[in-house]
Image (cartoon, rainbow, N blue to C red; front, side):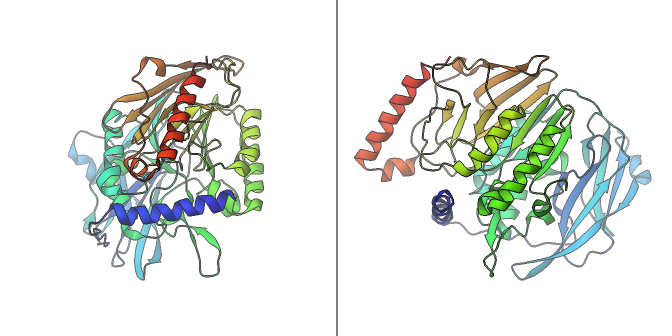
Length: 462
């Protein structure tokens, strides 16, 4: 039943995309020059860096060139050349080439210059910095669904996030990067929106329901663009290569889970749960952050993912997951699963966040688990880790701090929550215009009652 309801909402989302964007789609034809360039990882981030890009089929002998950063341009003469792996992909009746280079044997905590190309056709030189080989302070960006009007409106989310914190170490995307899984123009918009940022800051992406499509035989698969477009760890379950994976970075274990694959197939749900238990059992890191698309607790009424929650939440609690980053519901909510009236200063389980970075909006449910909420607001998040402290900040795409908290971990691994949101501006909870227009008077009254009840319950939270 949950999947059926979500499928109907997804269809509405596709119709919304056509209705809200009456302009022509920009063509994104490949050329001999590298495009859709993006950083990722398949190895140790302290000693390796991977890069992926696209060209047309005329390119042969694709390579990457790398050298430690040098203020003199003379370094280009001595750059190391690394051979790329190339694969042909046929999408929408067109054949294109995707190339990957894995730079290895790098020095920890060191800046490098690199470019990719072949013959006379090259990218510009980019910079990146390898991770340290031990626990150390760092920050990352987290985005909820981009999905619609990516070039025109989501672009301000990723560009605003980078402008706020250009020194971030990587970016996390919690699914539904696009709205039509195999539509090349939508992936073109997504890569254009990020532009050169994708070549400077590595990406860790998690698929959502809109990254999946149905083949002619009825089988559902992740987008034809997914694996060719990204370079992600391949240490997950066999059926979920580069959609479920884990990754250690300077004292934090990051785990990406494929919630859509799990909700489509109960055997995938079970095997993925078994896999994540093993990943969490053998976790030497102080902090653990999990990303998946479907929320454990939704921010929209009638959109509950109970199969996912019943399977995964007990695991999160048992193995002391600290933070769960999600998307799917096109509103904002941050909170935790604890009874009303009980102090929330010492969380029993992870902090859950649902966020949206694109312009497609739903009406918000204002559920009991939520400590901070937002409606009809595009947001991005910056998370920083420094020893025993994890700091979280959520910003509107206009650069205003909207939500903030800290987790402070004691030597026994128990967290103290310092909620900084009471000192911020009031919550933005007005219904999106489409709902204000189409809601009946009764539906508007129900929303107002929900809003008043939400305010009363917040007084019970401490």
